[in-house]
Image: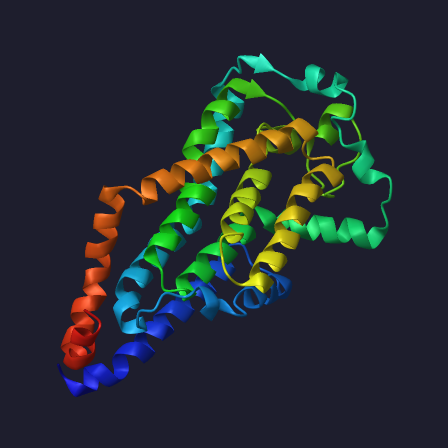
Length: 304
């Protein structure tokens, strides 16, 4: 293979990966704290990395990361169109507002016995970014482990399965946020008009903030890095607590979100462990393997 191409291949691929990660951080204008949290998650990533070269992994890895980035870039407008369609044309079969409000402790008042301003600000930050940041921390870290199968498992359990499977709940059950049902101030301080508030507070059961965070937590506990497991556990648990502390979700929303996440992780394991997925992964990674053999014939033979 051309020596010039061999020299510039890895630098170009890493520039592409850096550009993708930067693009991911700009979709929802991540704060510097978000980027710092992502960087912290990458500490010790080598403990969970596969023993394959970057040349072998990058073609498949970059294509996968690009696909996930494009979904992230365009999924949010799509989600808002779904919510708009629900508001305008859907007639929910069940209305759980009164039922949920009558269940003792279901409004998670115990979470608000102590509410210093700094804690409220922390919970607001956690909730504002938690819907996607917990997912992307897992995805980007999986990319740096050079593991396409792990990327697939995190993506399926954390988002790709959750969105289609959760829509039947949201399309049939009307359940609104705690503060809205109780007629108290919005602790997220979103300053919404009544019309905007009505559209925003739909889709509470199950809590998808909880389900995405809990799926990431369950999968992260399988990793070897103790630092990563501890860090992500604190962050994901904070997301779950924030949904109740800020009077967004009811306790049963959170329980439902955790059960829903566990089901998605179970289903993701079945899909990723299937012969069809494993066969696809081998062929997909074969792109890089063939390239590696052409660039370094002796090294490529040594790995087989």
